[in-house]
Length: 431
Image (tube, rainbow, N blue to C red):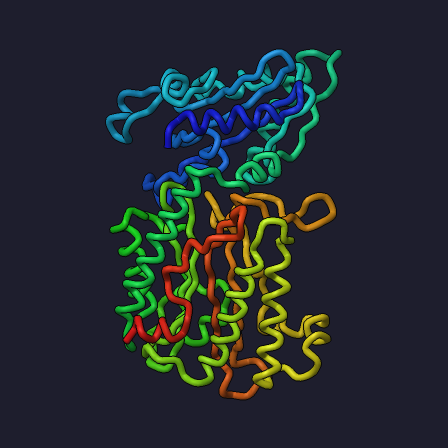
């Protein structure tokens, strides 16, 4: 992505900063697995969104002091020896020339310079409670800034999460193109893995196949820890043991998506290990599939973001009544939340640089309405564990179907529809 895109985002955000205020965005630090062996750096998402800069322990400050508007970045110092071991560093000069910041300094000077930068401002925005130890840093900087001029008003510290999050919520063309590719990589990977699964495989083998298929298409890292749950494991929403052998009678629920150029995809499919649904499995599956399609249809510009939730709840309640798993009036059961024993989570979440992406769900006192450029998951499910008071034939069935939906002016685009969700198509693919 061209660096001017990141500069334009900073410029757009700065224009929304009140006069005499600053927004502080910290980058990610290296995390160590053991001893001196670090994990690959994954830059903090908002920092990346506004900078494109991927060196650790960096810090960004956007300032509107009422007279001028500046973008400032603190970065690791140039160090020829460390560059031999760890690779190129841009340094302050590179941050200005290559990443188009107005000012840049070495990150070891942040404690000395930040009070000067904040002096005389009225408000400081940053994402409170998001980075360990950073809250105290901001307090120390603002206190030091306040002490420089006792005649100035004390600086107010304000949570800036929504300021950045709601900008990220609406994806631009460049982001949409990247996310389409992320979804395409994941979809192609699902198809390859679904064709290869057989009884006796271990969940861990299936996870490894997904990571391989992602990587060979350009998605080196998963966007989150994959869920590969055979049989009753699918009734555990965040199952990540991924170590059981798959029986021919099992369904397998896979929730996995690659990260491509920092952006996430997120797909769930549930399919029979044998390649053929049992009658009971198919009956539950058809309810979830119907709920998935109906909820996707409700993702439209101007609709409340709760509309897909309500639609999916009603479809699932009606289906459970038809199968005799719930009994009573469908409307009353829905009103009473009877479905929650079987469908206990929300139908979706925002998707972007993070798999559970930032952005508000409320506008004032009302739920937000869908707008073009938003991307949401749609993922209804039914989970019937063996501990539940139902007919034995339903026990151990867990099903979820998840797609990534782009909101458009005229409706929506399912970015992950390439992966079959129709049960007959699934059986045909796995035959």
